[in-house]
Length: 168
Image (cartoon, rainbow, N blue to C red):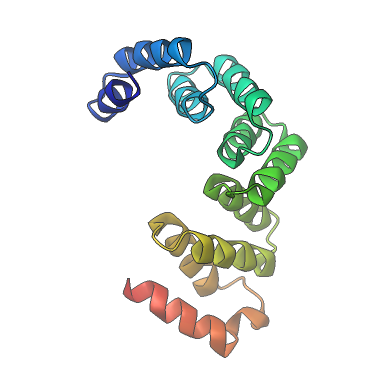
């Protein structure tokens, strides 16, 4: 059912995907990753409270599920609960394995606060942990190119990183 749900999402059949995820969860309620994929879909469908409920259930099953913390942070930020979102992102980033969504959330928070050094450090860590992620690479290059950044972002190491990122 999980594979059918994924195929339904890819083909734009979101209601069918929701039904397949519900079947998957009913067949294996202890599958925490399914409980992270399903809430993403619920959030896309506008059911933020249902998504949050499923994320909380996933975290109840596995307190170290970084993806669930990252998604919880996104949902909390969408609700304007920024301090809680920041805490969720921190927990998701410290999880094993860490959540890319959580790392990106922390970087976005630093950018909003115009803390360009912290944003660059967070994004550099995201790129190091998730080298294939294009969004992390683009965000890192953008911060390094930004006119608002501090002079320490112009270090030779960061300039080389920026050039390498822009070539990919």
